[in-house]
Length: 78
View 1 (cartoon, rainbow, N blue to C red):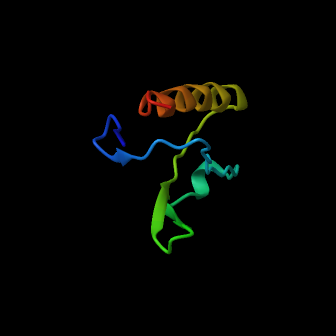
View 2: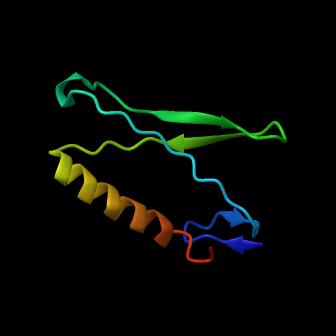
View 3: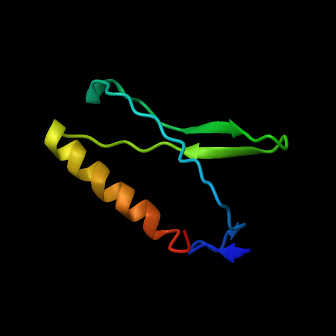
């Protein structure tokens, strides 16, 4: 067992799954963004936080690269 930077318990795993989704929508049409449920084999439910990136294609791509790097910084043990 390992603790993440956020203090969450993480069991060391041989294989991981990154769950993500992407969709482009007109920026002025979005009212709110929530989280998506994920059902695990053991019956438990986890949640995936959804993030919003706005700008030109180049700006969105740059922000996404930074977000991916920052995400893995939260889990230095993997």
